[in-house]
Structure formats: C-alpha cells, structure tokens
Length: 314
Image (tube, rainbow, N blue to C red; front, side, top):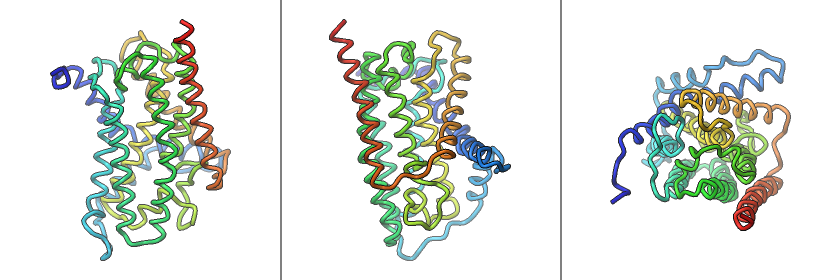
C-alpha cells in the first residue's frame, strides 16, 4: 500500500519539474546556437529563437501525405507527452522531498523508449526509404546509448543506497561522496550528445544529406506536429542536462532557492558545453560511433567497479 500513498507536498515538488521543462527547455537550443555563432564570428539568431519557431509552427496547419496513417498524426503528441512525463522523475527543486516511486528507473527508461518507438514508426509510416534509413540509425544508436545510461543510473542509486532515481538525484552531496558518481557525469554527457542527435553523432543543421538521423525522421512533419517534435527534442535535451546538473551540483545543504538557481546555471553551462563541442569538433563517421559509445560504457563500468571496490574495502 505504500506505493499508492501520496504525499501531496512531495508530489507538488515533482510536478514543478515538467513545468520548468516546458518553460526553460527551448532556451537550451538557443544557448547552443549563440555559442556556435560566437565561435563562428557571426551574430547568430536571438536567444529566444526556438520559442519563436515553436510558436510560429503551432500557428500553421499540418499537411499529411496520402501514404500516412493515424500513426503519423498521433506520433507527435505521443512523443511530446512521453518525453515530458519522463521529466517528472528528475526533480529540479528541493522545496519538497521528491516522491519515492519504487523502480522508477524502469518507468523512466520505458517512457523514453516509448517516445523513441513512436518517432521511429512515424518515420516508417511515411513509406519513405530515406526516413526509414534515419529510423534504423536512431534505433541502432539508442541500442548502444541506453545501456550506458542504465549503468550510470545504477551507479547513482547505489551510492545513494536507494531504489529510486528521484531520491538518488537529490541525496546529500552526490558530487563529493564518491568518484564513481563523478565518473558517471562524462558518460551521461556522451549519452546526451547521442540521444539528442548532436555532434559528433549527428549534425542537427544538416538538410537532405545521407548522414541525417533525427532531422530526416521528421522531414514530412509540418505545422503543429513539427512544433511538438521540436519541443519534445528541446525537453529531451533539458532532461539529460538536468541529470548531469544534479550530479555536478556542489551544494547539498544550501537553501532550496539557491540550489535551484545553481542547478539552472549548471544546466545552462552544459548547453554551452554542447555548443563548444559542436564548434570545435566534426561529425564522426558512422563506423566510429560505436567506439565512442563503447568508451562511454567502459567509463560508466569503471565507476561501478570503483563503487563496489570501495564498499568491499569499507
């Protein structure tokens, strides 16, 4: 019966995370674009350009191909809803203790997989071989990125001695307790780049090229459907950046307002770091992508073994 008991202040604390994601998520692509413009020596788009793009697309009508079915129409809503729901388990503020849901890691990963599934079948529903190619690459990359994220989550929950991701990410001084937690930050950053189709895994600014992954899967979308896909992509970027921000948050006993401001600053810094990576690196060849994700998995496993060794030594 403990699973069904509701702590309303804690529940309200968890509900703030999707609200923050809705408000601040489109700001992260804007930060990335500004950093890339700075490195390129140009003015670039305004910081709020992603907000303007989403608003503009929501005001347009959607156009559907005759080869598509109801799957293509439902997919944007399903992807957006599942991605936003995943942010519920990553607390952004400590005004209230997060609700501990047993095995919420499974729910979290299934929500992300549900969103990816609908994006893939939406691309396949267009009957386009080009979009099918992007869908196959998306499935292949996620097959290698998901185990890395899973190991990193296990490291965090092990160090916090809990079975809940939400509780683990809000435990006292994750940043200073163990080197295994710090070792989880770098693999998570690589997973962020892979899951959000950023350089060096994919170039989000490419158009009609055989190297496209995320962009090619939504080529046939327009209007509100395209707006929901773009919004969901920004929320997914916010989701992974927030996890890394929670790992790196150095203050554990400060006032919740100070913690929240520091966390938002770290998330903005992570977005800036993505912009720096995209400015100084080129996209990897497809054959090199498994090697990079394998290296991230090795780093995550190293953190796991360090955690086990420390526990045995103690």
